Length: 601
Image (cartoon, rainbow, N blue to C red; front, side):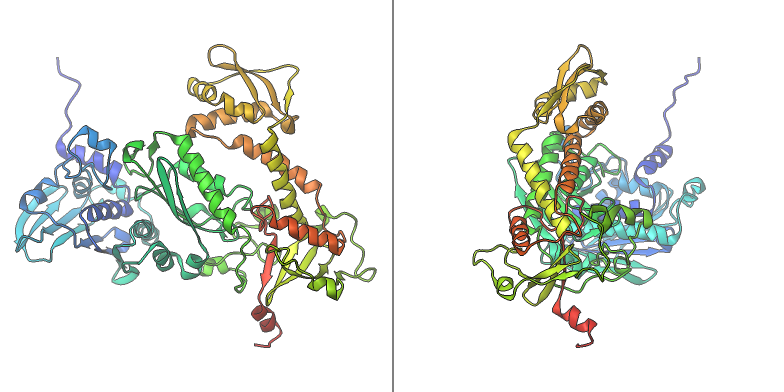
């Protein structure tokens, strides 16, 4: 009987492996960059032609390979970076599988040159479709050069999936940017058709590297973060809430120097900015997570972009707490520099679009409607016509100058007056500050309400007809592990046999809402991430609603004592520069801006 199971030929195995490792030209650049960094390179040049479809050439000054190693590196699973199964759980290098070079060679024409410093000459190999066609000595500087031509030329089905040259080049540029951010001590150059696109010298630190790659104005705005725990540490640069973007493309996260797009880390970053950013806006983050390699598995995906933490929930909560602590220290800061202009976000990496009616958000009018709030929506009474009442209230001169010696930032401002019974006008040194009184009081109320329920716990409301909820086995296990935490948040769940729980009580603040669906969503998120913030998010929404409708309104005249009390309250809370919806509380106009408007400078 003829056997139905056959061993695949080596060249077909290489093409299958190439499909996992080499998705597009950017994948080739990523694999070659990782090899160069692991080889100790301090100067790396990447030359690209036609978006990488015609040519990718990478030259480094790393340790190089001798004659024996240059042949061995083309064998599948040949590597110098691990030697036993135990090494997989304490990886210190970026690459380790030994698949990159043979996989790339299988789908291109490759010229590989390398020379160790102790050798007088280098070795050159010419490969076509993974087969060595020529081997000879060559003259070259110490290091390695890999030249990849005509990617996927023999696989037209794969090549047709490649995009335009500009699109492929954009992906390559992003790969180089991520790698350069992670390694400020290495010099990187990226050239396309002979034109330099990225040229960054060895930087003294991360901020200098960020300035070179993402923009100097942006780099000066970012806040340093450095937090250490018993098992891990996070450090890097993060944006204050007022510096944000329309997409998540500026969130760069690294684990032990490796760029990742991990959902646990991504969720933690966004959770750290909850109630600080408007819906649909994202922070700028360059964040490094360092932990024992044995506590993270980077070998769960061919591209190594996803990882698996041994203690996912602890890592998640540690990142959230670290971000909150760093942002708390900078939450009120509003630098006195010229404000952004329409279209500023597209004109430079450091520009931020203002939240105003005259400047549409980059994602369209729908997003604009979500972010803006009309004054009439939270008006206490209908606004009289301009002729029937003044829109600007001026406090008495002596009172305007009265400032407590130990006053904080807001209470130390010089009060000028109230504009349109909605905005407070204050002076900070030479600058003019406009404070949205409703947004300010809303933040004060929200922070106080949240502090109260955290200190006193959540009051429960028992359900008259407790529903029985059934879950998957994994969801049931995670819920069982987190019953105590759910109980502190106001949920009472009891096992009901098998994978079922009976929901006996819900937080009183959430009564009337779909608490059953919330528990199911929490269970699903716990199963996927090992941690969940959905309950706190739901409670935050209720607290925001309560704060929003119990606070000072727009079009509400305030006495000078009320204004002073509001400013003093702002000094007593965290994150006082944004309302709970993420809108700004304050806008600063520098003296130079005002004088420029009046053509005085």
